[in-house]
Each structure stands twice: as structure tokens, then as C-alpha cells.
Image (cartoon, rainbow, N blue to C red; front, side, top):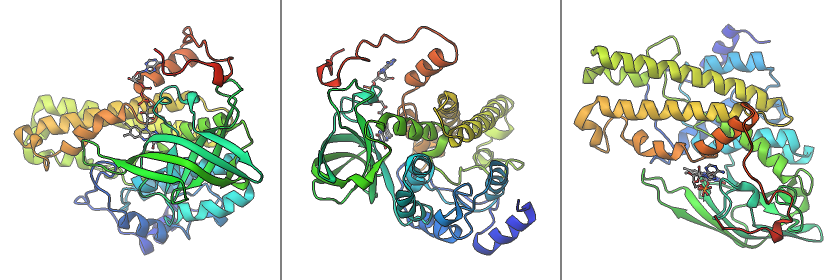
Length: 396
Ligand SMILES: Cc1cc2nc3c(=O)[nH]c(=O)nc-3n(C[C@H](O)[C@H](O)[C@H](O)COP(=O)(O)OP(=O)(O)OC[C@H]3O[C@@H](n4cnc5c(N)ncnc54)[C@H](O)[C@@H]3O)c2cc1C
């Protein structure tokens, strides 16, 4: 295993060390500058620094969990731009291709993800399939060696930047809803694919509706077996909930041993020296650290493959709580300035509600924890064994 000094020595050659003044943008919150992320990934791919556990031929360095943890910790003291646009590829699709993809698929798609040359989006949700994701209705019909895809996806983050989409589709409507699904990769500029951006209240416009009308996908772009789409989707969601789909890079905090940037930012307002605010700040910081450690544990479990455990749901709930309390408190602590669009914590405050929705809502995470950890009674699931084509949809 490579030592800490060697890692620093190599990273010093390609990256800038972070200083107390280093600030980061909050992508996925009103900013869509892709260049810094592309430059960082181009610089780190040959050493396999950003995705160290991936095989070296795919842009990683074949590191074990200990080495990856060491590298991740050291990377925090360098300027790592916000990698939000690249996070679905790096944090969700990459691990899913390693778990379920063919060698050819891994060879085709992994290195461009690690190098930042190709962006991915996640085409799961539909107007009638959000929390009830297994209700996906976008149809894929086989035609020789190809599949013809038709239907609508919605809330597709990053679709307007993406070259590729990972798309959950219905291949067997006569099967019960979880069983008739298959996962495909689709080119976002293919004939029949139309991306219509939606504006969010924080200024983001990369969040889109995607209309698919007869788009063709080769059978070699199917990920996992026919009818195994739910299993692949669960792998992707386990990584998303463990934090793989979030900002995926610099996280706005300085080294864990130094004063975090968000607290340093509060010093001019006087909040950091007020005893009541100091108490609030300390509590948030403790929750934030616990959230990160929970996320790391969930990410390790997700990397182990197999059936995703509920750890990701716990990690997601904690990280949402931590993000919200940081955003709202920072915004309140600076007083009237917090109402300005340029004010501390403003963008984070208007982005925060969406954190409880993306990747599965807080209620759904609590349902999972209630059933799988606490052993509470399950939800009534009357349509579980009924063919999807015969189940009632859009009915409350
Ligand atoms: C910023 C953002 C980015 C997103 N990015 C993507 C993306 O890139 N790709 C993608 O595929 N999707 C994406 N989504 C979609 C997201 O996964 C869904 O919005 C989410 O799963 C909820 O689905 P829904 O919006 O259809 O709400 P619904 O499922 O209609 O839920 C409405 C309300 O009912 C509650 N509810 C529903 N069922 C239950 C239940 N069984 N028990 C208790 N409460 C319940 C929910 O918690 C929620 O409060 C994104 C969403 C947001 C906000």
C-alpha cells in the first residue's frame, strides 16, 4: 500500500493545496461551470486518484478500502472542485458497471467517466414512478439485436450536460412490477431522445424532462440480464444514498482538523463568538461528522456488492439533516444579509428542501429503516404479485 508521504508527493505535482481561503461553488445549486471539474479529473485519472478502488485500466489504481480511505482523506487538503455534474458517473454508474456490466461495457464507459470526458444522467423517475419506482412504464421492446425505447422520464438531473443516460425500462409488462424491468444505457443525443430542461427555484436548469420516442439501443447496451433491472437499480440507489450521487468532490469543509470553511465564514458576523450560536454550531458540526462517517460506512457496504443494506437510507437521512441545519443556521446567523441572493447560506437554503426528495424522500428512507432495521410492520403492497399491466396506476 502506498504511504501518505508518497501520496502527497504525487498529488503536489498535479493539484493545488487548499488554503484557509479556498472557497467552493455549490454545483447543483445555481452554478453550471464544468471546466474545473474536467481539468481536475483529467489531472487525476492517470494516477487513479479520484476513484482509487477501480481497476487501473479503468481510471483507478486497484486500491483496497484502507488505501482508498487514506487517499480520500489526503485529497481533502487539496483543491478538489465541485464534481456534481460528474457525480452520477463517478459515484453511481461506475460502481454499477463494475458490479453488473460486461467487460466490454466496463472498457467502453469507465475510463471516460474517471477522466471527466463523458457525463451521465440517471433516468429512473417518471411522472407516475417516483417513490413507487417499480411502477416505471417507459417501454423497451426487442427488435432483433436492438431495443426500441418509448416513454417519458422526469426530474432527470444533469440530462442537458450528459452524453449518456442509465435508463430503467419495462420489458415485460405481464410480469409483476419489480420483475419486468431491465436497465439500459442510452445516448442522450440519439434520434428520438428529447431533453427539456426545467427551472428550479435555486436557478438550476440542468434538471429535465426527457421524452423518448422510438429511440434504439443495442442489446450490448443492456446492463445486467433481461428482467434484472430492479437489482441494478438497487445497486445504483445504494451508492446514491451513501453519497455517491451528491457533490462528489470538494465538500466545502477544510481539513477535518482545521476550522471548517462554513464556520470560518461566520466569524465576521459575530455568530462564532456568541455563546448560543457557538452551541448551535458545535452541534451541527458533530452531526455533520457523524453523517460523513455513516456515509463512509454505507459506501463501503455498497462497494461490497450483494443486496444493498439499509445503511444507505440511514446515511441519506443523516446527511440531509446535516445539510439542512448547516444551510438554515448559516443563513439565519448572518441576519438580514441572509435574504440577499449573495448572502451566506442563501443558495444552500433554497436548495435544501430538494435534498429531502432527491434519491428517494425522507419518508421512503424511514419506511426502509422501519421495516428492515426496526422490524416494524411492512407497508400494504397489494400490487406486488399482480402483473404490472393489470395493476391500477395513478390511483391513491
Ligand atoms: C433535485 C432533485 C433531483 C432529482 N434527480 C433525479 C435524477 O437525476 N434522476 C431521477 O430518476 N430522479 C430524480 N429525482 C426524482 C426523485 O427521485 C423523486 O422526486 C422522488 O423519488 C420522489 O418521487 P415523486 O417526486 O414522484 O414524489 P411522490 O412519490 O409522488 O411522493 C409525494 C409525497 O408522498 C410521500 N410518499 C410517497 N409514497 C409514500 C409512502 N409509501 N410512504 C410515505 N410517504 C410516501 C413522499 O415522501 C412525498 O412526500 C430528483 C428529484 C429532485 C427534487
